[in-house]
Structures are given as structure tokens and as C-alpha cells.
Image (cartoon, rainbow, N blue to C red):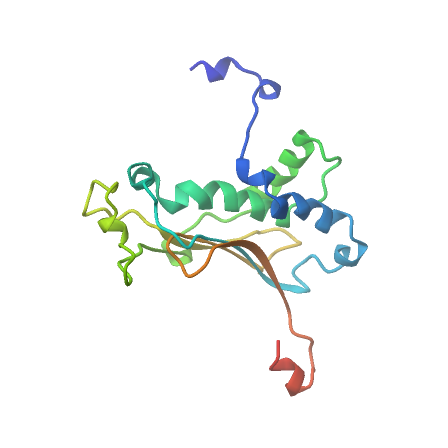
Length: 198
């Protein structure tokens, strides 16, 4: 109720993930490099993956994590923000309002998720590492909270029609990384030796 009394220009939205170097460099990569201007579209890009992996479990945050899961903790905010930066059109300026407007435009073009475009899982015991349900801070030992999620999003606009954007996030995986992978289409008619190496 109190927030409804604020004007839009009085509200500050802060996502700490947007302060990471990888994310901050996306705008420069996209809009300050002439080599990407002509190929940043469905004609050249086959798919985009935004990946967040951690090689550890909840580390004492099971109580918090069990209420939210990886979708609400990472996928629907941090990874969706990164995906929007990759897919958005060039803003009029780098002001917060102009960037927000372009991200909003692209997000409005995203088809809602369905069960066919979402995969979830929960890590289990492996060697000396406890599974999610064995974590001492996870109270509900029957919990179905997801610790891994992969979602395929489709942006229905002229630039991205037909290009899947795959968002993946998980805990207790093999390594720790945050990355954006952009896979380009194969060159038509390329010799087989080169095609097999891509």
C-alpha cells in the first residue's frame, strides 16, 4: 500500500547481479562493436544460453532457499535480466530509464513458459556431499524445491523469432561459472572437416 504512493521516478530497482563484470560488459560488447551490429539476429545466431552454475549446495541457506528455489532465487530475476540485455535493442542512452524501457520491450515479446519448455531437478547425495534433503538447514525433508532449472524462452520479434534463449541455473553442479553462450549457425556448404569441428 505504501509503495503505491510512490511515483515511478521515485522507485529504485537494484539487482546486485547486474553489477558483475560479465553483465556490465554486455552493453559495450553489443553496442560499441561494429562487427556485431549486422550479425546480432536470427539470421546468424542459432541459440543463446545464459548459464549460472554453482559447485556447492545451499551452505546453510536451506531455510531461505526452500521457500524460493532456484527459479525465484536466480532464474526469474538475474538470468532474465541478462537475457534481456542480450536481446534488447539499443537504448536511446545508457540512462537507467532508457535501458529499462528496452528491456521491457523485449520481455513483453517473450512467450510465457509452459511445462514443455521447463525442466527442474534437485541435487542428491554424491560421494561425501550431502543431497539437498540431507542439508541440515532444509527443514522439510519431503521438499520438492528445485535446485536446478532450465527454461527455453522464445522472443517473438523480427530480430529473434525462432532463436531459443536457454536459461540454466543450478546448485551443487560440477563447477562454478556464469556465462553467456552465443551459438552461431553453421556456414552453408562448408566442407565436412570444418563442419565437424564446430
